[in-house]
Amino acid sequence: MAEIRPLHALSYDLTVAGALELLVAPPYDVIDAQQRTALAAHSPYNVVALDLPEAAGSDDPYEAAGALMTNWLQQGILVHDDEGALWAHTQDYVGPDGVKRTRRGFFCAVRIEEYGPGRVRPHERTHPGPKEDRLRLTRATRTNVSPIFSLYSDPNQAVWAALAPSTAQPPWGEAVDAEGTVHRIWRVPDPDVLRIAQEITAASELLIADGHHRYETAQAYAAEVDSTGAGDGSDAHHFVLMCLVALEDPGLTIFPTHRLVAGVDDARHAALWETLERDFVIEEVTIEQLAPESASGLAGASPTLQLGFIDARERRPLRLTLKDQAIADAALPTHSDAYRRLDTGVLEAILLKGPLGLTDDDISHLHNFGYARRPTDALAALDAGTFDLAFIMRPTPVEQVKEVAAAGENMPPKSTYFFPKLLTGLLLNPLY
Image (cartoon, rainbow, N blue to C red; front, side):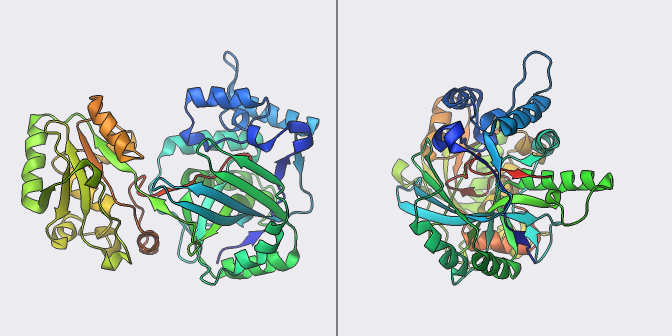
């Protein structure tokens, strides 16, 4: 079962640090050098200075982050909540589909568990590089700087019903991000609300939606501290900062991440087209029809793989539909039925690792491989000559994410694009 407890958060003292909007940042893994500079220019206390630390000359950036954390605590920029609370959180956003929605969740501390049934499950493969970076930052700051975004089941929305009265009051903090999403949080110390949240989440698995590297970092850090003989299972380092959102929340949406391939020589190009003509129904469509319709329903009831496709050599927008599910079954014989109906998994097995010759290492390290959030971004990459092929994906249904995870399998990277992202800096979680 999942175990949650109140968050003894570090939060900005807004009377000292300034407006929350100037202090928060997107997740570290979507910030480039130019964005980091812009965020740091908003305020000397912007959280990016902790989350993506820099140091002068040969100084260690992680040590610089640790020193900065100490400095901010001494100055009262960050303050510690000794009593603890849950924090209600809403995000008013317009998705890539142009629809306005509100996603609702809450911040808490969650006991770190090994992955497994009834506890915490991942849903995507992870890579070692980001985990080492995050572990060094955690050692230096002894803090979860960024939250993990996870899902739990609450069909009756009982937790949000308990939290909702607190959100009738003005929020503790509010920030609008660069994409126009309005983030609001409310501190909720009510023990009755906590009891309801603990009862509901105790009966649910937690499925990590975003933040796998951060969770695995938390596991590693807890093991390191334990190896020194420090503390016991109730200590802060055995818990991690999470924002939990109900799988049934009407504001929860998943959007696709499209696939791009480069380095397609004549031999691979010929092999690709041989496979496409053998295994797929190929239809010419308009650019406006390039993005396929969303798959709906449970994974077991989803139609076979369907995707948009453009070959930079021919520039014809095409719709590809797998002729028979048996083709995917044969290509993924050791995988579960849920995985064999997963668009990103089937594409990877039949085309990316087949005639295009990509390996797991190529995909992990973006060697002749890349991603695009929107079809227009994918087309721009072809126009620029950066990539040769674009595969335009459908969103992965939430139920399919659950089924693949329940089968004990991890999806290919970026099989899901949960929008919007959580901000870093709304709340931090000290591990001491």
